Image 1 (spheres, helix red, strand yellow):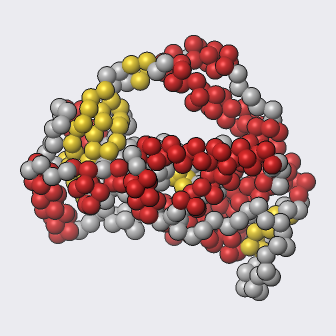
Image 2: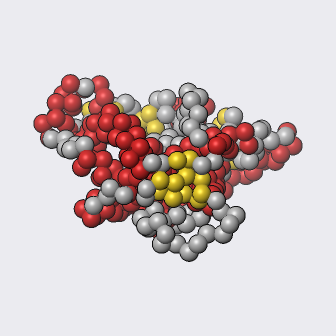
Image 3: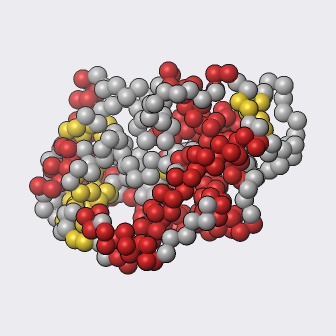
Length: 370
């Protein structure tokens, strides 16, 4: 649901330091009242307007540029023929956010800020340190301030919807879901492992590198493997050399179950022993050097550890059911108009090109490309 109300939230690879989506461009302030800005230049036309909504071409361009940068950094460049569709989607999200912000109370804004701060702490914890957190943000071309602004924007919108829809999930409802869906809380056996990726894919086009460049990358991988097996710090090597922009800031580490990683890497990791550094693994993404840290047995997640996630999930379901009709009403009341003909919504049935909160997808996991 947040993908419908939060444009370009930074995709964090735990939350997950890369979500949902932003770039070095600072986010456009969306809590300003119309008319509070200096008069825009004549070359900056309105692309959408309505009561409490005024979006100019520069606003849209900034967010689309951020989205393109984020998609490129996650290994999924936006193709030229997808640009208009991406602009259309981002504009719809911007309109939704502006409309929801106009409904936000002081309490909603406070709840949004608190939730955003908690998300930032969780991201830092997952990555292991503030240094790793900042390094990942740098790789994604953004800053702490930009990430926090986007998360605050998203969680404020969510707070508005929870209040408007009177969504409150009780412990009893969460327990009922837990008891009635036991298979959803069976954690399969997993592996905690780190990898160094030397990519053989052009980051701009997604095409495979020519044979001579692949051969050079293979030699680099062989040299790194030799250093790792000689005792050099594996995490340090990953931070210095890996092309996996998501994991390198945390030393290349992932924890994954069967089906959660590209097949070649998964097969190698599950076949290895703890503390083992395997041979070079080749996938369609490049050359991987893998070190297994820990084998995690299958287990059932206890209710106390699952209850927060269950409540969030049930709340999201409740919001999703009511959101389309509610946002349609807000747009009608505000008299929202999209002024650029090519940006008006199209019925395509296609998957979104820009996914502001591809939350759990990590480069290296299916279907992402690392």
